[in-house]
Each structure stands twice: as structure tokens, then as C-alpha cells.
Length: 603
Ligand code: GCB
Image (cartoon, rainbow, N blue to C red; front, side, top):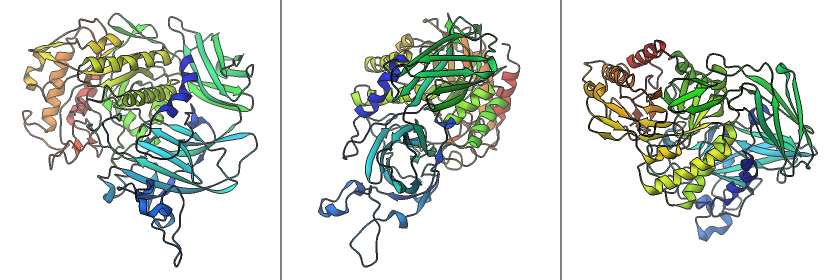
């Protein structure tokens, strides 16, 4: 993590931005715990122009004077020729993907320009950041016609320092957002989920003092029950600046000074500390202060480690009763972002008696992680290195590393997060191994306190599942996906399969499942009925309970989600139907079967 503070600011700038031929912008940063800072929300209606021909980037060389939608041009009757005008253009709600807001944009993938005005009165000795919770996929941001930052990757936040361009009074923002799928992107061309485009998470203005805390971490040291280690990183502070850390409920007051890198290190004993666990999700209020900057957070303390094929939480073996889910908005479809979305999704997981969730296949909205901290639900958090991406392109590796670093940086203070996942179902090859090895090294150097995993395809040799993918050598916990009874074989054969674990590491079955249309009933041999799905779950349990090294499961999937790969009319209608709950919130039979199984599971 030490390395991360220094390295972090550099990599965003170094990423090429192949789709945007514009002057280089400043780099972005990522302010940790921005939700606990005072913010001015910029959520609400933003004007938009869909630009499939990319004309806003100056696509027409004969009309040089018309180039650049970054300008806030207005059409004036009787005035000069102007061929766009944001103020006359329709609006989209921010946050929100564009596909689920306008019928005309349902299948739209490409470039779309957003614009909104704001007023601002700066205070002396401050910096102003423009914060985006997530923009899918690539964003180029302009304030008052100045190109302020670029960002690539659709599921992590970024902050642009706009202090030097903001004016006293009226200002405007233009955001060029491009969700074109491409071979060098992460994810790449094909995924089994909807490529929801747009400014999908909240936007705000965040004012901080000239010297400000951009990152911190406080973790329980493995093998102890009261030893806390961490750091606070301050930007713009002289070496020797005093940083105070308080935990009022434990009567702890500590202080340290920044080094030449702006980093103040902490290490102290916290007598009487109560540990975080699913049964007792204890969070403590942590107050930080560096000069005039103050920040608070609610943090839990626990250890997570591996011993042989066991996973230990706070030193004791634990079984992870989980479920996988997409960041899909319950009952309205589209990308999830609100507190209500988080409460519904994690509320269902809680009802299932889960102590664990797999947030598939990319970093979810941060409010889900905060709620998981409060509810005591452990989290598997993943980057969208999905299926067969380009293992040899340096840009692809850079953008995968960037998304991994941003995920870890944003979420490393959430006790709920126990596993960082590097990938999902990647086909075996030496190039893949080399690529994912680099991600594993990166994750370990940035966060040595958590476990590393991946979801791997299970290869079957007859009725034997041999967990021997070489990727396992880089992991602490092996995730294996299998679809016995759906894509592979019949449900009646599932209990005949046996599992081998040559690496001797803990195993999570990270996916199994079957499709069912809510309300479609019939014989349990008929695919897409609730009865068929339910039978697959029951048969899976007969097999899973015989695997001696199984340490958890995250069946696929909590709720139906949109995917253009799922076309069957009257049944799928653009939804992957493997949900235990339908996209309308109807619980299927298998929901109650899993609930019952977890409720009776011996720990
Ligand atoms: C998988 C993928 C997941 C798909 C699922 C399915 O193996 O990891 O993203 O949605 O199968 O439903 O086929």
C-alpha cells in the first residue's frame, strides 16, 4: 500500500486515449472516502447529444469553425451557422445509464456528449475537485471549454482537479462519454451483461483545503486481536506535518508526522477492540485530521487468512454462504446506483442467510460495500477481466491494472471486503497466465491484508472435476465455476461428480445455476421452469456437501439481469434468467431452497 500512494497518481496519465484526439488533459486522482466529505451534488438533468459519427471531435474537416462540442455553443436566430446547442437538447438524468432512460438509446453504443451549468464561489486556500462515481466506459471532461481530465474504465471513480479553471459565478461542464466496445478494452467485445453507457454514478463538487488527505488505511494486523497498522497520505503538505487519528469509542488519540512523500505511518495497540464479523459487524468511527482537513469514516477490524485449505476469519475457520450478483437495479432494470438499490439487493442476500456475496463482474457502487460493512456480509470484489481479453496488448494490461488499483484504493477500508478477484472464466494459455500473474503481484503489493482469488472454468474429465488450472498458483483461494445440470449434463447426474484439489488450497464454487422464468411452472425436467432450476440447486447441494475442501459457494445469480446474449422470446426477452429473484422482484422456488439450505448448514 505504501507503494500505491506514490505510484497511483502516475498511471492514469500514462494511459493512452486512442479514441480522443484532443490536447492532453491533467491526470485524474481518486479521493478515498469522498462520501464523507461535504459535497455539492451535480446530480439531476444534464443535456445530451448522441454523436454516432463522432462529429463533436471535429469529424468534418470542411467546417473547422464548428469543431468541438466542448464549447457551449448556442444557436441564435439570424446569427451565424451553429449545428448543435446543448441548451436546446434533451436531458438525461445523472446518475443513470442512457440505455434504460430513452427508447432511442436502448441499443446505443458510442459517443454521447453531456452538458450542465453550475455556479461556484471559491474560498481562498482550497482545491476544487469534480468527482465522478463512475462513467462507462471512457470519459473526457471539459470545464469552461478547458480539457481537464480523461478516464478509462466504467466502474471506478475519478476526481479532476478543476481549481485553475473554475470561475467565480457561472461555469459549465461538458463530458464526452464513449462506451464503444473494443478489443483492447477491459472488458472487451463480448460480455454476458448489458453494456450500460453513461454517467452511471453520482457527480459532485468537492472542495478541500490546499493540503488534503487523499488516502488512508487502518487494518488489524494478522495474528493479533488489537494491533492496528496504517497510514494517512496528505497531498500538498510539507514533510513533518502533524496528522491526528482518533477513535473516540476506544479513547484512542494518536499522532504521526508526514514524511517527504506526504505519508504519516501509524501502528498502535487498541485495548478492548471488538472485532468485525458477520455475527457482530462492529464499526468504529475514525476521525482524521491534517492541518485544516478533517475526515471521518466508519471502519471495522478483522483479519482474513488462509491455512492449508481453510479460510480463517479472525483466526477461526469459516464457510462462506454466498450468492453472486450484478449491479443491476432491482425492479426497474438498468445500472444500480442508489442506496435503495443497495438495500434491496443486499436485503435479499441477508434474507437468504448469506454471510458473503460475490459482486460480479466489476466493482459495484460503493454504497453496497458500505452497507455490507454494516450488515456483516463479506464481499468478493472483482475487476472486469472477463472471458478472452487481449492478453498481449500493453494497453489492455495497463487498463486492467488501473481498474484493479482503483478498486483497491476505493474499497480498502471496508472490512466486508475479504477477497480481490482478478478475473472470470479466462481460457488457459501462457499469455493469460503471465497477464494475471502481473495483476496478482499488483494486488498483493497494494493490499497485503486481503486474499486473492479468480473465478476459473471447471474442466471435467469424465465425472471428475480436476481443479488444476495453473492460474491457481497465483491465488490464495480458488474460485471455480461449473454449470452441471444446465450447460453440462443432466441434473440427475450431478451427485456423481467428484472433485480433486491438487493445489490443496481453499475452494469456493463461484458459480452454478440454471435459468427459470418466474411464474413458469412445469415438470422438473423442462428447462426454464422454476421446478427445473430448483432441482438443479437440490442436486448441486448433494454434490457440494461431499467436497471436503469446499469453503464457500456463490450460486449464479441473485437477480435476473439484462444481457443481449439472451434472446429467447417470451422467456428471456434480453434477460439472463438464472436469477433466484426475477427482474421484477418475484422470488423463484430455488430462492427458498437456498435459504433453507443455508439456514440448516452446520458451521
Ligand atoms: C458464466 C459467466 C457469467 C454468465 C453465466 C451464464 O460462466 O461467468 O457471467 O452470466 O456463466 O449465465 O451463462
